[in-house]
Amino acid sequence: MNPVFRLAVVEDLPALLALEQQCFTTDRLTSRSFQWMITRAHGQLLVAERDGQLLGYAVVLFHRGTSLARLYSIAIAEQARGNGLGKQLLERIEACALEHDCAYLRLEVRIDNPAAIALYERNGYRRFALIHDYYQDHADALRLEKRILQHRDARSIKVPWYAQTTDFTCGPACLLMAMGALHADRVLERREELQIWREATTVFMTSGHGGCSPQGLALAAARRGFRVRLQVSMAGPLFLDGVRDEHKKDVMRLVHDEFAAQLNATDVEQVLGGPLDLPRLLADGGQPLVLISSYRLTRSKSPHWVAVTDCDEEFVYLHDPDVDHSQHRQPMDCQHLPVSHGEFEKMCSFGRGKLRAAVILYRRE
Image (cartoon, rainbow, N blue to C red; front, side, top):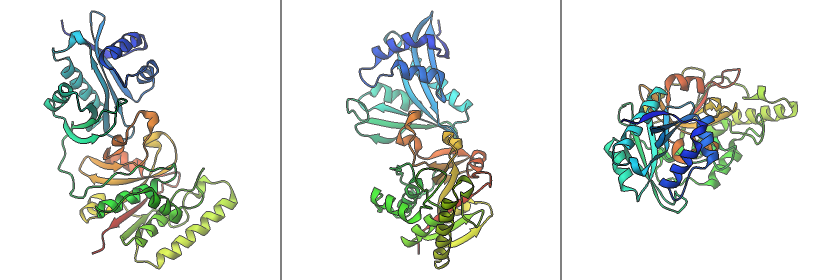
């Protein structure tokens, strides 16, 4: 009799916890984690059962606003192993990811688990990263990925990923990535991340510490020897409508005016309005940073910088410097995020004024 596959319900918790105890000695999911996966996660927990007995489960999480899915955990009961159940669960998880418009499925697996590695590689997953000291017992993990929708080969320029170290330095983190893409030997370090923030911040933003304006980031890149194109949809100070205090608005206007004066003394190409032609910019050797609304990624309405790593007919690929641990994400979940062109168009229009902004770096000849 073939197993039945269905979505987990809260009543499955005792059986899921028993299976977790049987299959794993470390890094076990807790009752609280399983409950989150079943009731609130942006994902699905699929179980396999026969005659009311739980034989296995698999958890897939979706990265909101992107076309990326992650196989978070999979477990097979001892009595059900060797009968192809792991392959069946994997196939159903991939189908689920496709139904959610995902292009990639990613996962981690212990490097000392050859049976699981063999299962994944037989089903088309490729190794693309080794993560040291990943598990609670300090074991290493392999990161595997499968493209479940096909696309062309990636561009020759490789964009390194860098995690912002504060809540307010997404712009500097993206600028570090762009500079590292154009000069592969460049060291990406926190000292420069904070220095760029000091140079490029607007001092005040909607709340908290000030973020970095397109003009400030363009100046910071020009000072570091790059040819820069600055493309914005409006000329005046940005984000003023999110600030109520008139004193703060005055300071932001002064900072913007000083940035504008400094920009006019450089060879930075300044473009007002017009579409962001990513295929052409990338083909010309440009490395874009794009301002987006983080709402479509995290449901928080704030401006956020991301780095574009590639673009094809279906997707724009992004490095997001912000790792949202509340969604059980890891750094690798924030790299080369596939975002449909339609979703990207919605992302990169911020606020009531539909602000669009990008800073594109090029190597100087």
